Image (cartoon, rainbow, N blue to C red; front, side, top):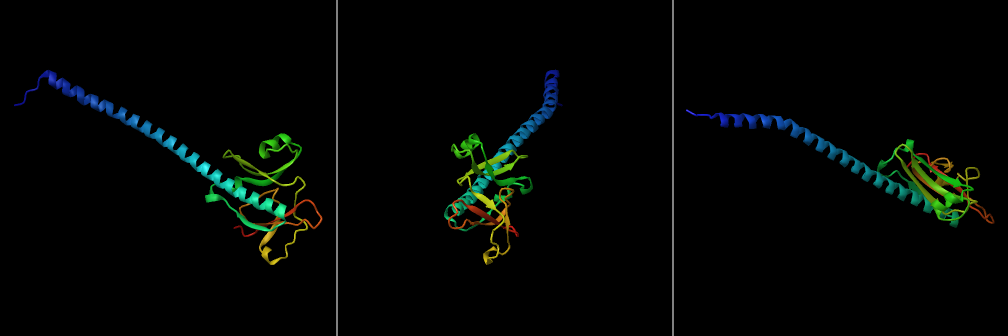
Length: 198
């Protein structure tokens, strides 16, 4: 026959009830910690993905810039693809265009590090996501982006149409041509965009 003293019996009840009372509290603490870790982790992942996206966009903008500057300077024809890296942004909500800044030396100085009153930039912005990027274009202030007088009859332009890049730049295939004639000092850029996209 097992004997229980009142002291050992009370001790058993005390520890038993204490264990039952602390279990929900420990579970609550674990849930709070796990929620905090998940929130911080998702924020860090989102920040990393955003940084990767911005770097990819910067690369695409640099490619467009180089092709455009080469076309303007050397009067060459350049064909390239402007891409949405890993489909990291919603094209419907994005603003991508070439912008001429006039009579604003402060802004030109901030973006292009020159004291010119007028400059060209390539703008990328997604206002909802708080993403914005401006890239200086090394072009004469008298450069023009034309839509009239662009030759579209050559075979290599089949499937392309002339667009105005100061209005919108879409993802897809591009051909840039400088249509300035001999004796004309400043570039006249025709921008051809593939109707079929990429």
